Picture (cartoon, rainbow, N blue to C red):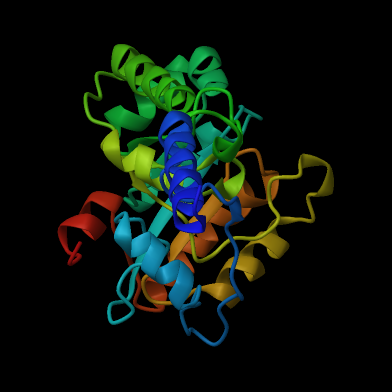
Length: 259
């Protein structure tokens, strides 16, 4: 067999393997991260990641020319603070998106109903919180379908368009599968270590962490398990409003974006 024929056979075999595994695009694992914003300047993930996210209509920040913020929460389990968070959002008339897991759905149906009834978006954070780069396309689809279907049964929310990848880990393959299922990946441009319930440091820590990183177009990620967040939230919202910021929903972000 000639060298060219051998190369052709190898290429064909490689393509067949890709098709069989469903990994026709890269499944290289990426942990979302960036250099934190300072002095009101939006962070930049770099051309490589910006282009990848744009290809699949994923976002981590809104337009930087408007003082608009997008508030999001991850809800893996309940720690007793979500009711307070919802009370503050209602009083301040601020919309939010709550990304929930299967565990949260099964254990907190009343809070889910309240989120939807009060005008918030419930998004998908997967059923079992796996690393999407380590499971098959079909498993990803099942993870997403479970959350969407169960939220619809409990709350009546018939559409679910937004996904936050569990653990903040993704690949081009998982972006592609999610988009095929009708989801936009929602990353973030403002976050801090708030999820560790054994390392809460007081409301001032949460307040300062947010205020130091805030920028026009920020997608803010908070965790509702945090006592610090619950205690700081109202002051954060009021002080950001005093700075001229307004809060909009993810629906507003996508309706007013060039995607």
